Length: 180
Image 1 (spheres, rainbow, N blue to C red):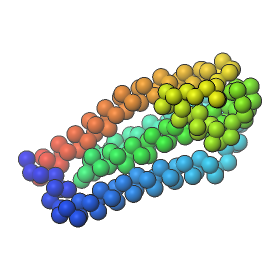
Image 2: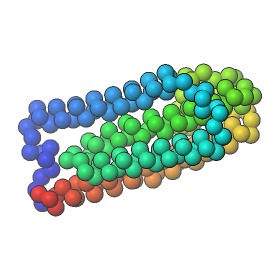
Image 3: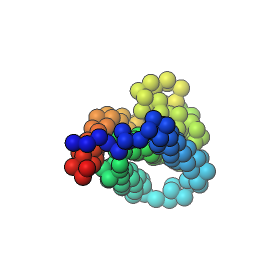
Image 4: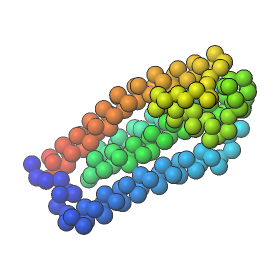
């Protein structure tokens, strides 16, 4: 087995490759968050909740699948996995933030206060991080169901998602070793 392509580079070249990968990851996360704050979301309110959830799930699964394929095909699967995580994690959080924002917009009684986009994102991150400061809480049964779904998916995402990315990196490194 020969060494991975990054090992063949000089130290300065390796730093550039890593810096460029981290920069791409940062840009992807910033673009997603910016889109969350600037795209009008009220048109989604016209969609039935089940359709919106299915679209969100399809989007997450599609992006995740595309990222796993990109990791496997990459010359640097470990670095590509970091980039993938920088897309998948914010997208996941923003899907829930959008759902909470729309729930708060649709019916003010879903949470202890009306939610701005920032409030919805803040609430999503506190649920994801299992911190739960208590300043914003789900009040209605509908909102509590959604928060419960997020908590369960958080556990699945952390376990299975990280495992999937790790397996993709190993698979990508294995294929590259066979090619060399």
